[in-house]
Image (cartoon, rainbow, N blue to C red; front, side, top):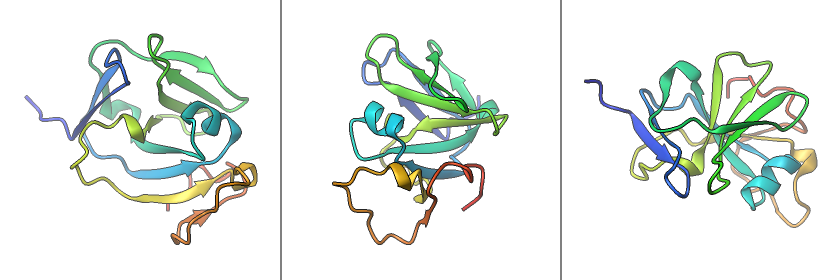
Length: 142
């Protein structure tokens, strides 16, 4: 049996998943929807190939959240779990906060997206990450 590279759950553990590989990148999204759903200044997303994620109990409930993306969430606790962008077929973004393996080394975030929608009270750190005013370059490797 293959060992999972990492595992994750929603807050109530109703939605659980395993990933057979580590994410290819992590990005921080400052769009209004991500801020509202995360309750913070941004949402960090971990990118996987959809074929590398196995939902081990139940799949997230899907909701069309914009003209270009569909989000997955837990129907019981409301945790944000996943996002699929129309222009990135085969890609699956997992909310990085759902990753259970806190000691697992995963890539550090490499970009800030939708900086034009950033909360005025949040100052972007001088972290060297690539910054994009919108999400037009979501699929760009960083």
